[in-house]
Image 1 (spheres, rainbow, N blue to C red):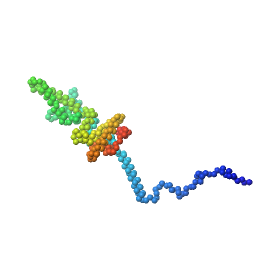
Image 2: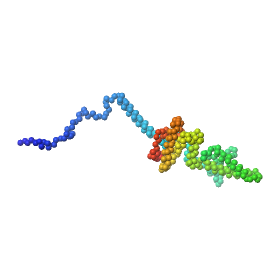
Image 3: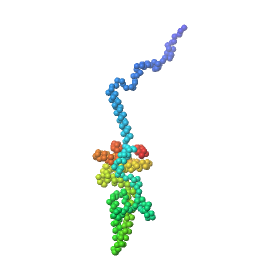
Image 4: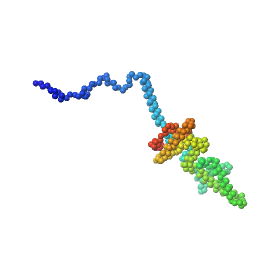
Length: 318
């Protein structure tokens, strides 16, 4: 006899749930390409040309931005790294004296009495065609002396001092031979003093501060209208640029000197302010000044930012 299942047994039988994937409708082959990312076939020729032109323009703009960033000038030195032609061809570079060049020259040595002057590097005295003893003349003078003042010290002063020493012998009558002997002795002593004084005023015997002061005088006389024109913007920009190069060279040779890094950043900001003021006065003077001091306009225009990490990388990279 066949027994039919009851209602309770029918409810207990396992039926597939509604969320089973077997009951979901399968996509048809015609709707499988409805989510494609390819370009629309119905795009017009003009729109496609405009899209490609815009893409090429953005790519060219990005390439120019990368090349501009790579060729950006060094905010410390004012020119691009590895390309110092702008600084080497500037007027300021030719005016400044390098300490190594000044101290590296050979100093005249007095002839030794034992050797008779055979081992002397240079004669201590020079006699011209007229028989006047002018002594050793240095190429560069310290303490702001010029050639006219050096002529007075080297030529006129020994003669006047020897003559005064000869007259100081008293009021008694003295023979001509005695006066001549006394004058020759006094003149030899004064010439020895003259030689010592000339060596003192020689720039080769100056300190680093003395060379810096001489460079400042050279800058003022070159970039100013007169030797006392120290407040001119071109003069101030040139002096600040010279100090920046000097301090940057020092930090490159002494990278552990962290105390002078902040003064260097301060000098850079001061130079930017001076050049900004000069640009507000006269654009032509501003452009000429940048060429003469060897600074790229991008190094001083806009916001000049020199961070600690950037300055450290510049010092270590150099």
